[in-house]
Image (cartoon, rainbow over all chains, first blue to last red; front, side, top):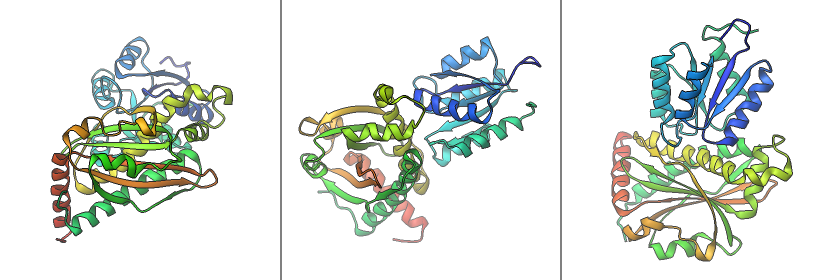
Amino acid sequence: MTEAASPLLLIVDDSRTSRMLIRGIVSNLRPGWRCVDAASGDEALAMVEAEAPDFITLDVNMPGMSGLEAAGRLRLKHPEIAIALCTANVQDSVRQSAERAGLHFIPKPISEKSIADMIAFFEGHGVAHA
Amino acid sequence: MHEVGELQRDALAEIFNIGVGRAAASLSQIVRDEVELSAPQVLFLKPEEVRARLFSSELDRLSLVSQDFNGPFDARAMLVFQEKNALVIVSHMLDGMVDPEHLSEFEQEAMCEVGNIILNACISALADLLGIAFEGSLPHYRYAERRTLDLLGEVQEQAPVILLVQVDLRIRKQSIDGHMLFLLSVTSLHALLDSIDRFLARQGIG
């Protein structure tokens, strides 16, 4: 990200509905952020290579690569990107996997509060935003 | 018919009660309204009894989301609403984000996500209480006529006995009735009962 550019959030979810909901709340809470989205882990990895975002939200259960696998690959190449898992799979085992990987966990259904918490996590990750 | 002990049946009902409660909380957030639940009924039925048992005449046209969960045992979970209610749920979920005339375009995908959230909430509670983990398939959404619904699919071929957990959901002010169903084969039923026994032993019961 250049110094002048506004923060970029990549929303990865196979559900268009979920992408719209996340984007809608983020746009309300942080009007200056740019949001782009991807419908799969593979698409997300390609987009990150084209322009690395500051933050990523990842669904877990998607066609092809899972969100956890995508997070692992992203961590290897882009450890500077803050990542949140946003999933309906709220099993303890998934929460623990997220915690071990240093990912913020957002249970679905999302709410304004859970997205606000996610933004606080992102903003505390070392990138300063106006 | 399968032999299931009284304590096992009671524990199953209580575990599903907790799971369904978690699911109802999720649905309540989605539709921004209170969701009433019936106490889960745990039934062991033959496949041919299931359809007749499940659907009363007012549920002739169904909107159905199903998802398979695989782990120490396998289960097919289903969320069933009257077809006409699906659009009402979607309109609550996407309130103000989509023009009403375009709402139907989102119905299938939005209902998949609703099913994904609700079924996962319930299965996650089951997994956490039993100390196990499941992998879930992607949710599958379809319409069906009650009289032609092939509810059991492959499970029917393998399973002389079906565990049916029937719960009625009612969303206040909207009169939306729904059902959550969990279908298991006999093999999976054995594995589930083993998990229940271990759960009871951990609690110092049984």
